[in-house]
Image (cartoon, rainbow, N blue to C red; front, side, top):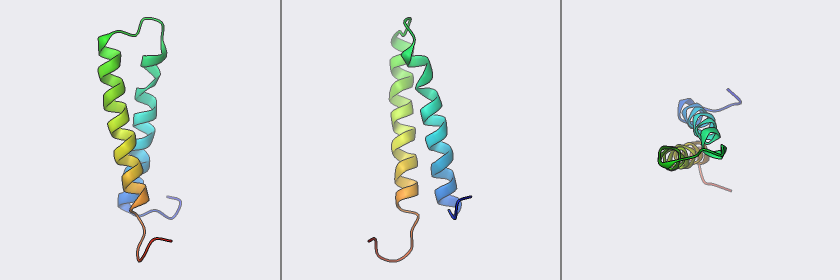
Amino acid sequence: MFGLSGKGTTGAILMVIGAAAFLPTIGPAAGTTSYVLAVAATALLTLGTYFIGTDVGGRPA
């Protein structure tokens, strides 16, 4: 997918799931559960970004 290896593809999937997990937190009735979900979404986005960012061989530019 887009020239990514398995690690990069996993990172892309984690980023999509993390972005989708933010959607319930923008509603007017966002409670404590939504805040916990936002923390989990942030972790997924961070991990996904790390996986994509380290999916290159050789020295970084």
